[in-house]
Length: 116
Image 1 (cartoon, rainbow, N blue to C red):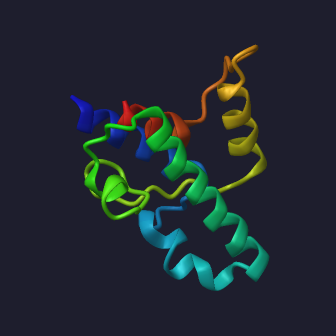
Image 2 (cartoon, rainbow, N blue to C red; image 1 turned 180 degrees about the vertical axis):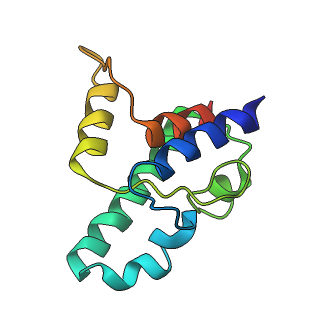
């Protein structure tokens, strides 16, 4: 059942600008179109998501995250959530203990379901 949740999240993120491209496009071919500053921001975002995974689940069984330091779903598929204003705002509100978020972000929700 856990694998289905992760796939559900990936399907949502693909519909949000993935344009049918492979999930690892953001870290491979997608880099070519990004400026240096965009690449730095995206790498920082991926590091933040990796740290968030370890914060929410310090005893994670995801060997890609725990042993290799790679941002991957438990299935081994790379997580490619673009750092944009919508994703950043959602994450900020979700982590706000005083307010929380009543909205959904398909990519981040799928990512968090996979962690849990």
